[in-house]
Amino acid sequence: MNVLVVVDMQKDFIDGSLGTKEAVSIVPGVVEKIRRFDGRVIATRDTHGEDYLETAEGRNLPVVHCVRDTPGWQLQKEVEEALREKADCRIIDKPTFGSVELGEYVRRLNEEEPVDKMTLVGLCTDICVISNALLLKAYLPEVPIEVDISCCAGVTPKSHDQAAEAMKMCQIAIV
Image (cartoon, rainbow, N blue to C red; front, side, top):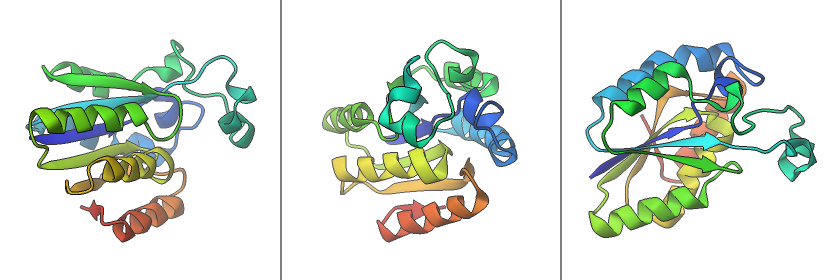
């Protein structure tokens, strides 16, 4: 079985409080990737509470974003529609960059049916994509992991490229 992980394709990261033109530009590619993917699809949502600015993350990144049940927390409309077309899609809300729940879920999937490969796409390359790629590598070290870099965007183009290089060093394929 192949697994596609769609990381944090939410309004606040695309055209909201932390949006960038690079994030906007990857939406069509991510939608196409989801629609064409033959395998299990998992999407993550960065999820914060009203107390975000009092959290460790909020003190270091004092931009309110992805507060549960707000418009910015929602998946981008086109992405959400593509995910709904998948019969076996799971959405995981995560309170921080990497998701332990995602790692545990993929490990359980692998016990039920071996995972042949995991592919990651989404936002932000240099924060949540790299965090989840490394976390998944720790949970299933023998399963090949790739990041479709054309379907990712970082906080800046430079940090996007740096994250891609860091993932390569950790034996994550950048395709």
